[in-house]
Each structure stands twice: as structure tokens, then as C-alpha cells.
Image (cartoon, rainbow, N blue to C red; front, side, top):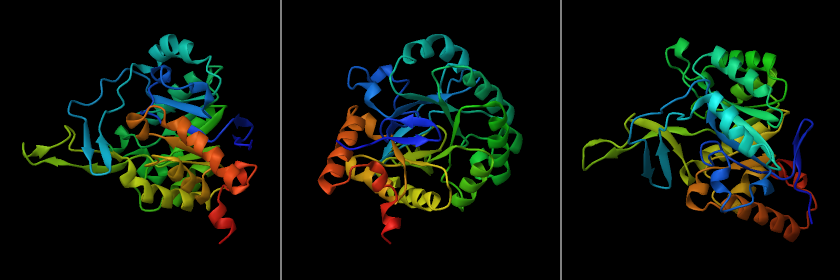
Length: 305
């Protein structure tokens, strides 16, 4: 057997395969398909302070080699999560990470402080791709000052592991990675979805009610891989890669490029067992190549360049 473990500071993960927020529900939705506790961790669906209805339909559309979504962070809010979801998932024998969202810095701070009190949640993933209502709707993750401020303020109230999820819709992803690291992020996850759109030529209307939405799936993998490689070479904290990972080979590309772990997203819609299949595939690859530890191949392309 090989050692698949990695860590974020003193938080240990049994293996490097996690699920991506928004694609895995809260976990119990997949209990009939896989042993959720066998994963390195699960990132539960985006959570906000208050309940959100999400955007109007249609809010999902298939595109060549991918899909667009504009769900709009539909969720029942932190009160519902604490009372109804947390009791159901806290017994999973894996790291449960909550994806945190807000419209203002104050939202992020208040929500993070609430989650900090939940004993069995060892980390949050700060989604800074949300629109900052005080900045005219510009996403926190596309403005360096906003990214710095929200990370700094959350760090003040959140004492556990802080993962910041970066938006790819920027000119220099490295600048944002360095800023959130400076402000206390323990890890960085990337990439969130790319901004895209589609038009239905039959109805002669946009395919999404919001016109634009987030593109995910195989189409974005080369962009995601490039950004993960750039960030992994620019920061000292662990990087978690995602974006178009559909199979073992895709996951290994991210690890070889410098990711300490990966998140599986859109692929779970196609095959609910894919995350564990990828985990098995990574172990088989290491055994075949003669490696005894996942860390031996993390960033391997840079070590041998």
C-alpha cells in the first residue's frame, strides 16, 4: 500500500480526493452510491447566512465538453444547516468543509464565526467569487483589495483551517493567491467556474435566465491546470486543484502540476461513484510507478524540469 495522506497545517486528510461544493449536496445524497467516509473530505454546498431561493429557471445548460450553471447559491441558510444538516453529517469519518458565501464582508464574518463553533467542521472554504453588493456587484475574487479585506476579516474570527477558493476570471491568478496567503489563508483551492454563456437558436434567447453563468467540466481543465501550476509555484501553502477532472488521469495531472489534493465536481453528476474510482486509480498509479507516497509526485513536473 502507499501513503495517500496530505495535510493543511495540522489538519490531516487520509487521501487527496475531495468533492467540490455544489456538486455533492451535503453528503447523504450520495450514501446509496459510495462510502462517503472513504474520501479525503467533502465540501458541502454553498451556505449563506440567510436562506436563498437562487436564480430563476432555466439555470443550467449543457455546452460542448461542459455545462453552465447559474443556480445562485440556493440554500436554506445557516440556521437550517445547524439544526438539520449538521447532525446528519457530523458522524462522517472524513473532513467536512463548509463552503462559505456572502454579499458583504460582514456576511462572511458572521457566517464564519457561526461555523467556527461547530466542533466537527474543521475547515471552511471561503468562496470569494460572490458579488460584493457594496462594490457595485463586482466579485470579491476579482478585486485584489476586496479579496484581501474579506480574507483578513474572516481570519480574525475563524480559528480553524481557512481555505480560500479563487476565481479564474482575473488577469493574474498569482496576485490573488499571494494576497490571500498574506492575509492568513491556510490553503488555496482553484479554480471556481469560468464565466460563460450560451444561446438557444431555436427560441432565439439566452440558455440561462441570468444570460451568463459558470462554466465547468472538461472544457475548462487546461485553464484550471495552468492556474494551479502557477499558484503552486507562487505560494507556500497547500493548493487544492479542480476544474474538469473527469477521471484518474485528469486528477494526476493536477497533482503532478503541484496540487496537494483535488476536488471532483461536474463528474459526480455523470457518475456518482467517480470520486472513489479516481481514488483507487491514483493508488494503482503510484504502485505501478513504484512510488510509496503521494508527496513524491506532488509537483513532480517542477522537480524534474
